[in-house]
Length: 372
Image (cartoon, rainbow, N blue to C red; front, side, top):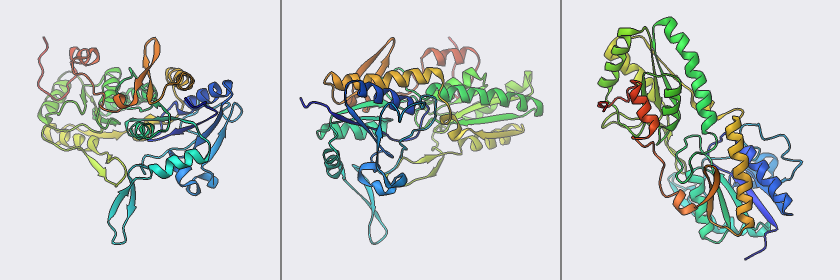
């Protein structure tokens, strides 16, 4: 087994509160072992296209001094990107059409050129899927799970989720007062492309009347029925909807599609608000929290998870582990094969306690359901 002398850290995909805490913990833990640490800017762009990065520098030296005071900061000091998969990099042909090429050979050569012995890759399912393939091609990789959507399998929770839920709940709390004052229904759209973890937790914590999630295709007539019932005893209603939620036999609200990146979702909140208005006659407004829920200072819980993940990733490398993802398995941090963690999405179990509690409290999911 090759002795580690120098490692790299990169962050890929959407930003999330806690990324900087991971970077700090991994850097200090590696420094304690006498390793050199560099950060790759903007995913893998810092190696493949350094001229496109800030100041034209693709790599940044990481040490105790350079990561001082970043634990509480949102975003990532390395920058990130959610497009330009190096294994399927989009290239435009002369006729204007697009094709993808595999740049993994060039990328691995860059790791060798800079004397990098191993990589700590921090990202969601897409970024860790890339990391898994690079590991299979010979680069020692440890993955750190990051997504506010909490939809990565193999870990109880991902960092960023708690901050997103905390901020989303605060927003819903504030919207209660304006909804009640104007006798309105307010539809709050939150992130959640394929899984409704944020919507479920924000909706339950924020006392929503309706929660719509991707796991349960909804019937607008049932949603409207719940709103009417709410107005029998109250003067306002709150609906929380995940961006990836769909009606029965419906399609997701897609804003844009671009080669080399996931489709951009948005607009489901406005759609649901318009349908509620048409079906009930109730004055309805929509609010999209969008990127607000993944910005700003991480909560103490997210900071702790991030620090533990960063240090655990270095311990894993020191122990000879390769091709694994660190994962929260309370009270410990466990190791899960990257291939396993990226092979499936973690959807909301429809029989989980949070779902059952929501049902018991009378929250509608726009489906047909009878309490047992």
